[in-house]
Image 1: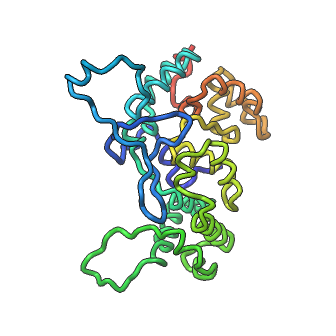
Image 2 (image 1 turned 45 degrees about the vertical axis):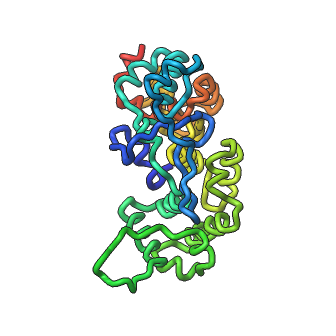
Length: 302
């Protein structure tokens, strides 16, 4: 499937960070991105960790090293190399900005991100941006004059939910996409989906609640959890690019296998799951590097 909206940018290892790093406690099995409540704009994130003064550091009791947004990528890469030393040159060549300290500081509005994904389905990037701008304009007061033009804010779910399908379609949405966006807004407005749940619930609960929403398929939810929420133990069995990268990584002739046809032409679903399993709880990072495999000289991995 094609990449969804902003999610596609996160896969690109060369994208410049959009936020300054903030050192906070981190956990590979939960959400590490600061999550913005779509209704209140409240940011849900662990508190910043202040560096202790030299005196406090000297007198502090000895404790184990804490996992933070400053060191979790380093820990992840070390784990990947411990599991399979062939990962080392791949990691050395490709810096994973997605889960870097700066990447983990990027705030995400889950309603806007998921709506953007729906809008982006099966259209070009330029068309998606145009539709999104028109969609935002539907909920913007245009009577404030032209003297100041602040960046238009994405509408809240409570604004979108009562809006008719007909009006939503005037932004360029298809009938089905308008229904999907309205349905998603209703889930947030009713409290069935919340920023707190997305930030704190186990991944399985987040995944199951999101794929129950019309318009959100499993792959889209996996990419949102990985690149939006910055959950570091997500693995997509349905991503053809990951399948191809894994096959190339273990030395298969992917050019020859391409002509084979079928969903699992490069590697079976079972093989993918078994190969990825030891990389837990950092399978999102492993997945990201599998996208990078064919940009790296495979012979150096042997």
